Image (cartoon, rainbow, N blue to C red; front, top):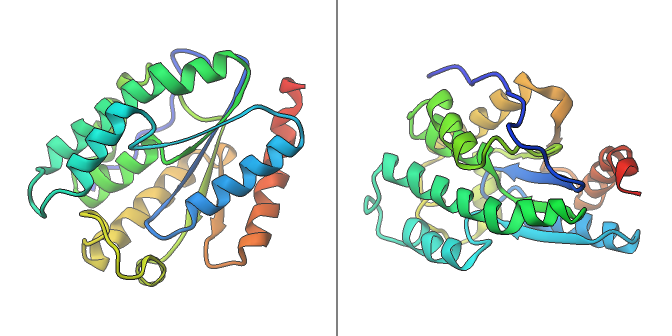
Length: 221
């Protein structure tokens, strides 16, 4: 497996806003924690833009349907990586960066680390290659903070129940590689990551996220 690429400085800044990504394997509780964080921030008076990848735009919803709900084997690994990168390029250009330029807090359910973990690590396309593709697509935009909800393949499958998309249907070995891909990224840039045990109580997780986010809000006031 290719070693993850060391982090690079964003080619273009994040405007006046704050950019937070919530990452983790399927069933980690990303949507729950994104919603809790957004609700708290709105209560504090901040303008929050909730979004996700793929599917944060009309184009993204079309691409999401193609890549996640097609038949197994219907999308090759490299095509999968390119589709997610195309979605990310459009998402950043039309949703994320404009909101950041307005000084908003953007919370995205998944961002480029998901491509590195799923396509780079689990699909064995290489951390460096997949990460470089997404950085090019986004003109180097990286989150101020990435919250990584760490979940085992077994627990993630149990939480998902009986409804699975094309990636969720992959074997536990695939999801184990996804998990390790995320952890490899976090280990290379610990100051920009908050790694939490997703098996913990959702309320306690939300408290830990708020504690980490609070110091980042100073420049928005």
